[in-house]
Length: 324
Image 1 (spheres, rainbow, N blue to C red):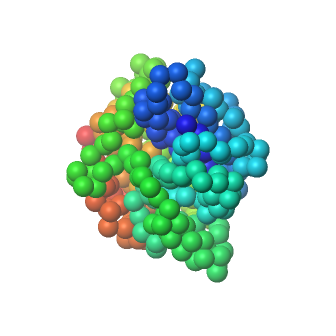
Image 2 (tube, rainbow, N blue to C red; image 1 turned 30 degrees about the vertical axis):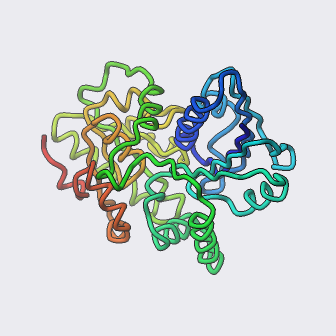
């Protein structure tokens, strides 16, 4: 079996791809190789957060799995009896066209894994997310429409963490991949509440000072409950922004970091990491409204609202966090 992977922009995406590759290994005949071409280049806010060492560390360690890092698809031969294109979030149109051109008569199965909570949105929510990330019009509208069309027309199988048809139940294979890769805790989490920040400043959605004021308000509210707030900076942020706060940094996704999982609770906006921590690890979690960004809660899609409601309480302002 030959597999090509594109669209990875975070280490969390790699865990979803890893879960799929385990299913592919299980489905192959004994001794058969799974030949993976990994096309890098995925970025978030203009920077790459995944490198070759992450790929080696977070994809399965199996002698039947052969992984080749690609700079372009022309460096890899898709010919063979079985070809699977694994895309994160939605199929890439240009990669699919190149694969189709070079694969001859070989059938291409297109598997789409989660990109995060955005996978459960609508045309509008995807369009709004890209606008926040700096994609300008009219390209933002063109790109959103093209991606939605490709997703609808090309996708053969959706390999998703959450199943809307089963009240947003977790996929057991993906859930086990996350849980089995979770690191050991540090035994110091009994009074620790972790705040998962988001790159609102980098996106231009909030001024630096306003966001730090919000973080300070959360810290003071948590302290009033007899616990301590520890900030977990988003991978796209400079951790030095939070020099005035206790921080928890690392190169694992928050969902795999045993120090986060072993904490008393976790707080944050309506993010994928917050949702996954609550769903995968039964970690007490609270959604926060960020002053100046309350409109984002109103702009969630219906499926996103249903998914968040299944695992998380309603979003509240820092001042309204529960006392216990």
